[in-house]
Image 1 (cartoon, one colour):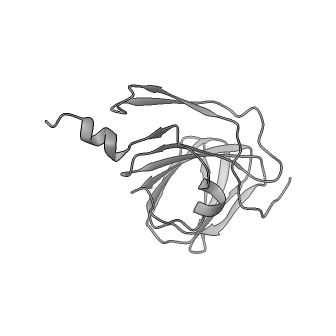
Image 2 (cartoon, one colour):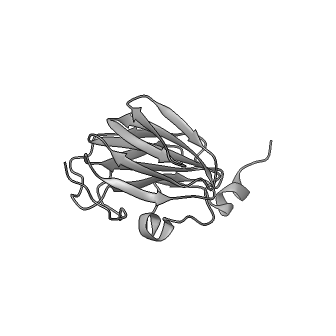
Length: 157
């Protein structure tokens, strides 16, 4: 089992695809198993950032981890496949495929992949600042992003 203490970096493999209207009113994400995950760090893909929420997909090899960090957002962590150990405030829980957990903002937490795994993290609201933003999200373009210009063009109801 490989253990790494590196923060994840951008990995250019697209694991998810988005289809839907350009307006962003309904977008469907198709998540597939990654062809490969780097040995050094988990693969990270920002699926969507619409201000109200940010969706981030993490793909891990067994033994990889995200070191303890915290965020200015509440998070919902969904195990898409595999198993992870999620630790927050010295409490540990194992998340397996199909399980979901919710964590309040500013709570230190970490993840260790017990098996190869994919985890979908929903950050509500999208963080204005995030302790991992420099390492994880720098230069990452979401598949879907709502802009102020797009909102102005939408007819009011």
